[in-house]
Image (cartoon, rainbow over all chains, first blue to last red; front, side, top):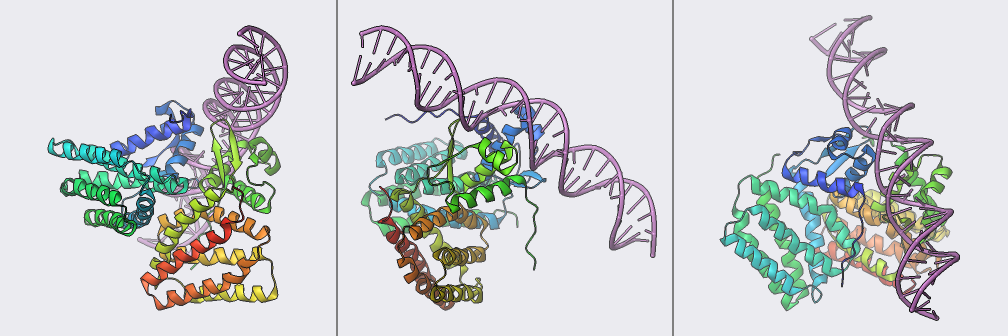
Length: 217
Length: 217
DNA sequence: ACATGTCCGAATGTTGACATTCGGATGTCC
DNA sequence: GGACATCCGAATGTCAACATTCGGACATGT
């Protein structure tokens, strides 16, 4: 079973580059993303950049206003609460629907990779990538396109929040990643819908609590 | 307290026109939306139409593929299940968060208007508009921008599904609209979080069940 | 009949030039 | 000094021409 290749246009390419630049810290939260500037750097026309920025806006990574340009989103605690409360609702639905469909072996592999990385002392950024992969796998398993799209509209924001959480130096993320995801796999294996749903929601809420104290405002 | 005026560009204008045309039935599900054709009819450039279609894609009303154009979405039962299961999760969250914040008087006015319309025999389309207004009010009351955006990504699709449900002639929609929304207001007034959440979810699921039997495939 | 190869028209993707809008700097009046 | 009007540069919004891609029609060979 092959994954569809799907050729991409310049707009998606541009979106990828700009997204990476934001994650890399080149454009900190609140920074302006000027179309001409980006077009020159990426060597594409402004139109393509414009469409790329529209894609990032769908992901909630940037916001734009009429004749006022596009900026990287801010990271207030209010934004965090918004993102994580919606995410909790989605995560509960996704995890429940994934029962019996998700590839448990793949999830186990990801958790094992986390555990290995943890003892070997890899950067938290890499653990975070595995973390996101883990949840992607669950969403994909549901086969619900709308659910996946709703998750994608939050995904980049979650990533950005967790990145700052990591970069602010709090290492307590490393303490819980493995255990919580391992527990999720166990519950998914047992297949008790209510317990899985509740734990998935709690998993998200606890991440918010850990984050909330560290943000401005 | 005034609503911000917010000048709009041609893209949003175009999106509005096209959306209306779809709801009006000018472009039935599956129909192709050709950029040149629309640009000529709306008397704007293709670029603006393109952006307008991108907005509609965010709302899930249309789908586009690379070099293959944009089409109105299909209405399979699978799509209905997807939309309504995500909606149920959002609706549960929104209704719970709206407790104590939502303008109960406004909701009551809307339900009364439905009841009046029902006895006076207005078209189901108008009841549907009030129905959507009702839920918009709840989402707005939460003040959660991400939640509102997630709802907007489903809103037009819900509208389209309900429209076809109405147009296929089943009048059982009229039988339950008023009662279910009246009950929602009652529960919101009491403010019991769990009961409200459960009922809001059930409200959505029952709409799906009523719809499911009437769609192709 | 079936599969494969090749054209060609139609539609979308991309681009650079032109028009419009914003918001701060400056100037003016009271 | 503060409120208001007026400019101006920088950035975005809009447009129409050019480039690329798709997928069906037709042809060809098996």
